Image 1 (cartoon, rainbow, N blue to C red):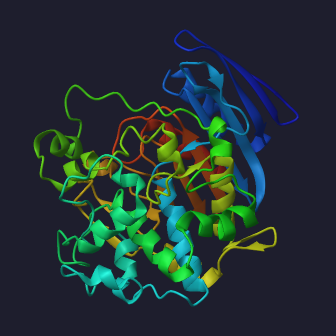
Image 2: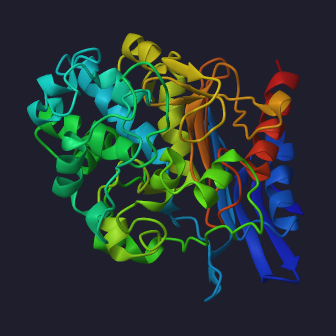
Amino acid sequence: MAVQEHNVSIELKRAELGRAHIQGYCAPRFRSLLNAFIENFDDDVEHGASLAVEQEGETVVDVWGGFADLKTRRKWEQDTIGVVFSNTKAATALCAHILVDGGALEIDKPVAHYWPEFAAAGKVDVTVRMLLDHSAGLPALREMLPDGAAFDWSEMTQRLAAETPYWKPGTSVGYHGLTFGWLVGEVIRRVAKQSLGSFFQERVAQPLGIDFWIGLPESEESRVATILPASPAEMPRNAFERAIANEPDSISNLYFRNTGGWRPSGFNSRRGHSAEIGAAGGITNARSLARMYSALSLGGERQGVRVIGEETLKRASEVSSATNEDLCLLVPTRFAAGFMRSMDNRARGLDSANFGRDAFGHVGAGGSLGFASPRHRIGFGYTMNHMGPGVLLNSRAHRLTKALYDVLEWHE
């Protein structure tokens, strides 16, 4: 390892992938976090990735490396971006809370107040909060979607407005893995009078100067890393995978398979990248995730840029729903109004997402992670292009968060 004046230049020599590099910046205090990032590559798991941390609004870690495209050996560069899957939900939720902060949206009002068609099929009392905290009863669509439906906003919102909830809204929790984006996004569209992606750019991405897109312009396409889906397991590893394999009518199966062309063909397609898929289609890198969450860790304002009011943010990040068995993911889950809270299920031998007791953020399919810790005043981001196993986080992100908190708590 060669680290000089905090700048990072490390050559990786791997039998499987050949030569690759890790580059960037790491403050000496966080050297053990950098080492954990390197270990992910040493274990022959990581192909390409980025990692960033801000504290008190300043960069303390910003590193990247490996390959953005394994087949062509295109390197992961400083400006590489990639699909971050459900990390997009936090960005979408933030847009909703910005509207709340401005008085245009009330989180505990019925959705139908803003979207009248949504009242159909027993949904008249569903509130905006229920959409945000996964208790609305709409985690999947029952009727099989035609290929390409996921990229047609009007079709998806019309189908969801007509759908009957799986349970009495507000009484149970089931992860709204893809539906979240169209449900919350349509409320945003109707209140703000502009699309989710354009609202996010105008109110969050551009003011903070972050490279984060919900609906990627074609001009940015050449910078996108190629996603490599996780290899299927020979045998189901958990209850979620068993439901996918053996229960075709289950919520888990419909969430995973009935995606209208998003999974997996949308991951690496232009139509997938350009669509405003507010639950899973966001495209960014660790630096931008860390900066967005840095602002949230500081009460909604970073270096003079106010994104959201502190009191609104506090309410948005409080636990709003929790369950011992999520009806979709089939593990215990805890949600704020659009953000995940840390989920430590290790005592039960179940998949977990451990990123700090006070923290709020989101995981992304395959293992990516972004979060804010107000206690430590940090924003964290980790993105990668080789998807790993697990319902929540896999070993790579857990290794990184453990190393981070070892540093933070050692220095308290």
